[in-house]
Length: 110
Image (cartoon, rainbow, N blue to C red; front, side):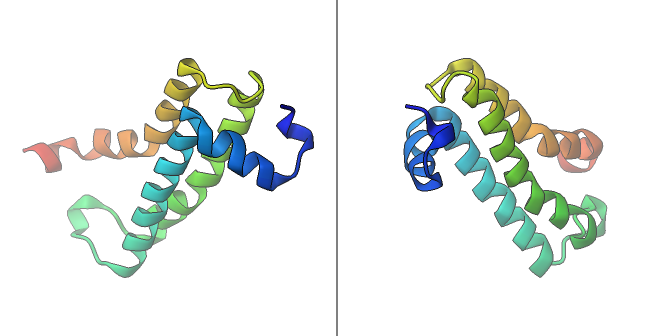
């Protein structure tokens, strides 16, 4: 089905809810929006550097970027389920978390 020329509701009910790539986008979006809201309302220890002025904007924007990557990469294959596209979206979804863990591994694991 050509979702690029259909209403957005068909797109949301179709590939976003029925493909692994869509599940990855929804899962990471919930995680990032939760972290963003949490950093706004809860004060974290200064050593973790999870202040609302830095963390919250990234966490609030990242779901939209993931959705754009979903449309970009899955749209090339007509939004059919694909393991390669799913792995690529997991990579992009984990990017901010991975960078934060790389910078703070010594605080967390030691």
